[in-house]
Image (cartoon, rainbow, N blue to C red; front, side, top):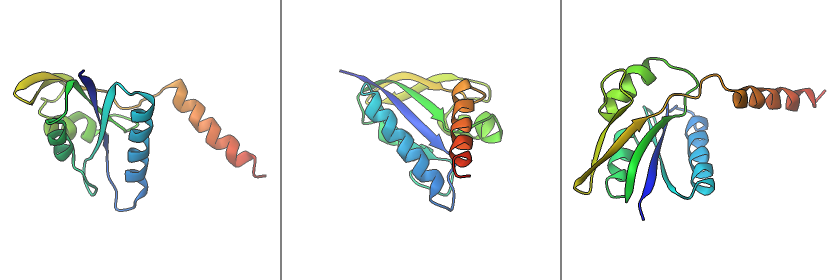
Length: 133
């Protein structure tokens, strides 16, 4: 049975925190959504790279690949760099991905953006700090 693939993209950092966050988030997604095969890829400074992770998907039995940036807002990486790496023209959200001798849909998701869940998370962090006084 085919599954869906998610490539969770992080920026990367010289410090370990970004990589750890992306990997932990990918693990949570994989545990909570068993119909998805989840991999991480990084823009720079960490491995695997986006390209390496996309190549790993070529051996998986998936019927669609969604590239999901773990970024808050649109910027140069979201609008130009990541699309170029995954083979999409600037402004495109859909393309094709070749694996195992066949072509499947490649989709590019938006960054997190403004969302009530993000506001709730910020309030959770604020309340945690407020509880220390």
